[in-house]
Image (tube, rainbow, N blue to C red; front, side, top):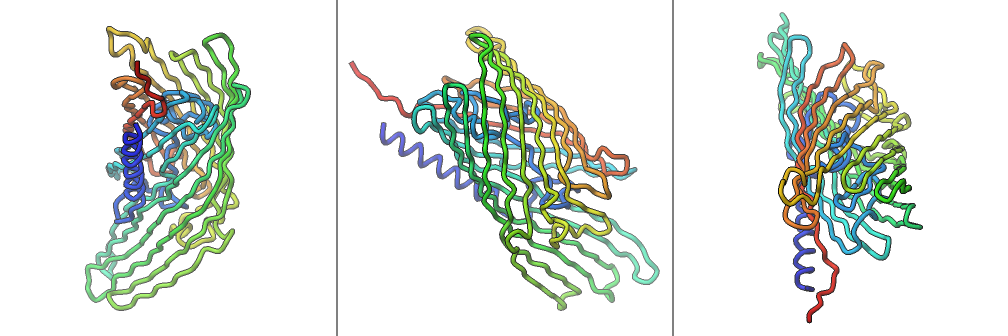
Length: 430
């Protein structure tokens, strides 16, 4: 038994570190792709694991002993007392961008999350994990002809993102009230570049760019109160609050004219110079045993004091007027399991999910928010014994709803692996 535990922990830690290294690499690949990720710290990643995202991204008031809910640290106590749980997720997206008669298509695929959860003592539990916070990925180019300079091409590109490693602790009091606290370490690199290329070699190509390396610690608090309605139905109220904290790190700005004229300046981000906004979330869920689940969530993020528009690299977006603002999200999701114990029909043991969401960006462009609306579908297939399962989620949405904005129509695909095992039971022999 002891050897099994050591091997299991070693494998999980190795996979955990491998995921961390893979997610943090900045070799020019795209973790996400959207022209709107040029603004601020990029496009905020859809919250939760594949389980949450297949229900529209709800989870503030969700409690389940089958899945790890990373959206509220208080939910970690909703588990079997001897269970060890792991969630590993992958995600991809196909995006179509349209502006007038111009169209472009892009695909991305990346690791979404890696989380482990385990009990500590009676009514207490903990989870550790790594997950993305924001994605930066874009490549914008256009050309023009001038009499003086001839044919020239403009290009703007960026990649990178911010990720977080977190540890959360939760405890349940009086069998109904659960409290949780989570510590997040956020880190990442963001690279942005703009360049002009000339066909006429008598003119020097020009390029400028910024490399932003940031990190910080922040905390998230959560609570959930579960009220029984009948012996098998429950109403749960949930709330979370994530603190606004300053970002540390440094920025590098460079300019190039031709092959020999190069300038580079480096500066350190002073404490309080750059902030990440706080986040308040509330949710209400209704659950009937292990058959039906319904939840409504609202979140609000305040970036008005982030000072993103005052730090070069976060604000240099040409002639576009960028301004940090208040972001909001409205989410609804549901799940249905016909008969989890059906021994004849496999599809009746599967769980079917659906959801919808509306996201308002944490910034404005030329005075207008960049909003997104979408619907989600999902399904969890049970695998072997216990609560092991594979979750498949689909996300169909559109970003850039204002008339003058670039339209981004996307089709997302999420794949989650839920691994469940009993690690702490004692073997008995007759």
